[in-house]
Image (cartoon, rainbow, N blue to C red; front, side):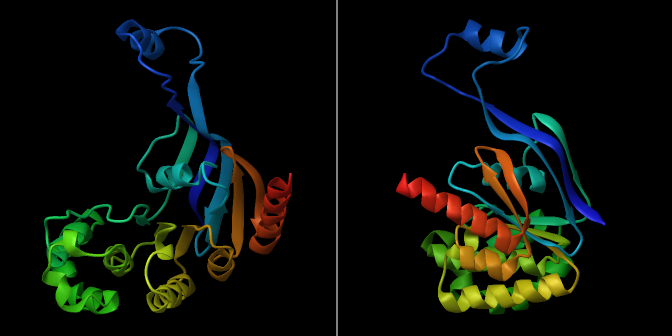
Length: 247
């Protein structure tokens, strides 16, 4: 079963080059003809992600990876084409997203779980497991502003995985934190995939991509360069990167 499908998807953003008069904005918004100053973060992207699949998106900075994940998570809408999703999606796209710095870790846990669709009853049933997995311990009752980036990542991942999504979307966040917790995350994601769930994953770490995913999509300047077996895609991508560095 297809759980995420991109059908000729493009995403554009207005390119601002200095101050513009009000009439310029009005003409751009409502005027006839094509908008020539838009920047296309994604260009005519099509792919299908299937139930139980682990799919990585690779590419250099600015290739469109985060834009693709935002569209897949439903946090943005395409400028052209269609995105279809089936099942519950949890996304870890930015460190501390969904958290408030003045609330305690425990309060943020409850808030974030609610944002992910968990009822208060289910959240309270899973609080102990979430805190134990995160390893935060007594700091769970301290304000989030006192947390390190690694602590925020551990709490965010723990809530997201305990919310029992059908599809988990992760953008680089596992690069933060100590090696012990990263290994625990990998083991948890392995069990997540073995249960038939789906993973959409972005990382600049080739070893993490190879470990976590069986298929990869290579993006460059918003376009799909290659889609296939993770080893074949990474070999091609890394080979191109080496050539670019030598030229």
